[in-house]
Image (cartoon, rainbow, N blue to C red; front, top):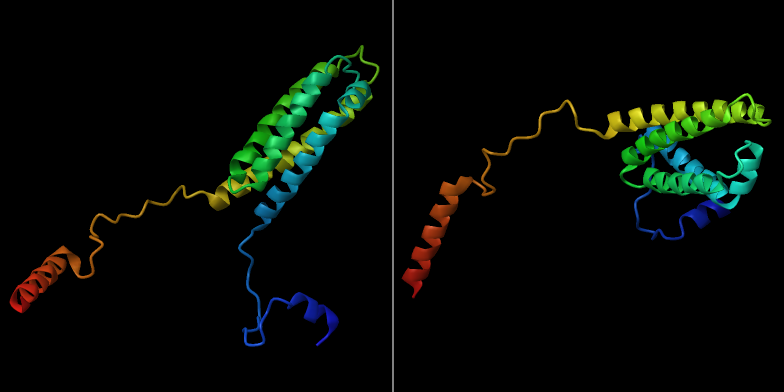
Amino acid sequence: MNVIAKLTNITRSPGDPKVLKTGQSAVGASDGLARKLGWFSIALGVAELVSAERIAGALGMRGKEDLIRAYGAREISSGILSLSVDKQAGLWSRVAGDGLDIATLLTAYRPGNPKRDNVGLALAMVAGITLLDIIAAKSVTARHSRSGTKPRDYSDRSGFPGGTAAARDRARSQRSQEAGAA
């Protein structure tokens, strides 16, 4: 056995079964994209919190540092939600945040802004990320939603093996046996 195999199997006992073949992963491609977008969102949010002055200067948006920090906090919360079990909500909140980002950048994309080219580049990048966010949100929603299927109907089930009549009969027979034994 080679060294890597020994290191990766340190928690296995000699009698444990060996995995001969693996199947499909339960994690789909859309879930992987959601995870990557979640981490991207957290990293971008931290950058916006830490470097709000530099970002505002690069975009010609001096005086909007607090807004950029608020957007950074929003990015971090959307990223955390995208990494959670409720990734659909996180991804759709990213899409909504992208809309806010685009609206804010459009206000800075004015002819008098000396950093207008930077804003145009930022708009193009946000548009590309928005496209990825929409694709991921739609894919994850389709993969994890139950829409289109009827909810299961258990109204004909009692929870008792053999039904309620059989359970009553067993209870009566048990009572009569207990009464006869006493």
